Length: 308
Image 1 (cartoon, rainbow, N blue to C red):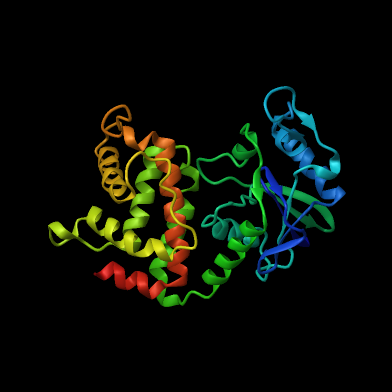
Image 2 (cartoon, one colour):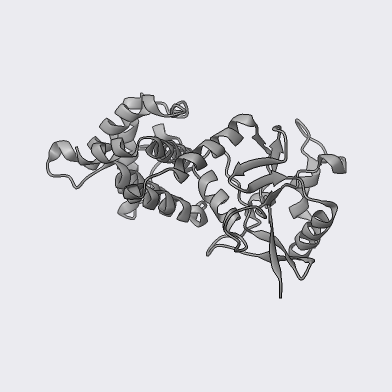
């Protein structure tokens, strides 16, 4: 039996404004599917959803305000394939995994391992994969507008891949933090688990075991992020909160403590300035991505900061 890898369908609805085909990481290329590949992809989506709702985001446009969905010309459909046929590792799905892992650190994530295409004795076939606890089709089943994937988004993935590939093996602690963040993907919809996981990653990169009142986790995170933020490739966005940036992390750690002790955060009183769980998670997610991207650029600085 002769197996040859092909690629994976992007399981998110992207409005891609950058030229394709485009190499995002070594040997992994974003492109439109061929007619043969598109036919198989649609067959797979129909099999998983006979009502065709999974195809809506790919083939229709939402009107600006209200009204019926607008069918796009086939040439403008938003089906995109991640081609891994030139990725150095010959095992099916390895290139898809690496792209998912590196894009997890970036503004636009590229989920692409849910539907894998490969050739078996020359015939195009597919396999579906899902991580424990998550549906590979959840993103395309959501009713929302496409995410803009532009030159800046592509460049961010390419740069992050280069930084990750060049990371010295002695900085294994940073690689571990990246893998921990990647492993949180199945828990996106479980706010308490996801929030606690993100806090654990921030602490693993920035903090040491507190020895006194001025070494509390809250103090370490606040002071070290204040030093690092000017060095990030993108500033953290505090605009969603009603309090000065310098006081946000103290309140966020109070929120963390509530979750860790099994309490339901009260966003009408104590945590009203944090808005709601979705706002908190979005901010923490972006902050963790920014921190991990920068850790790849200055890994020794991270180790030095952690120790002090």
